Image (cartoon, rainbow, N blue to C red; front, side, top):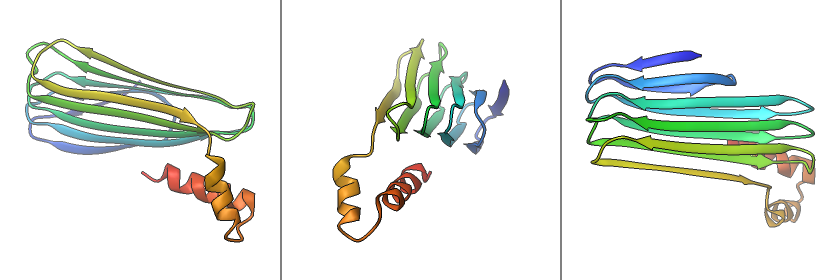
Length: 161
């Protein structure tokens, strides 16, 4: 497990580039973090990303955005957890997980989780797993773009973080 610690009054931006387990700890008062990650699984690949955002001090802020694309016969799992300790009030933490499935045989899971042990927090999570809407592909095709290229363009825009 890869661990990051954000100390008092420190701000950090973390870009996750590889699947695996990550622990991001906000250990100092006034610390903040932006966490971003974009992943693609293809062929028969099995890919899991697990992120724990642990608020261990008050007055902390975390924003997490995880995106993924599952193709072919692959499996993609995005699992995020926000954990806020006791006596860590005035904390804000937001987790978003979005996955596009590009094949009938691809599988994906978005698993957000919250564990809040104190009051005075602003916290939320959101998750979605979907296909590219056919009307989006159709629109690009009416502009003379072939379907494969249209799909590539949408995926590229989707994965931008």
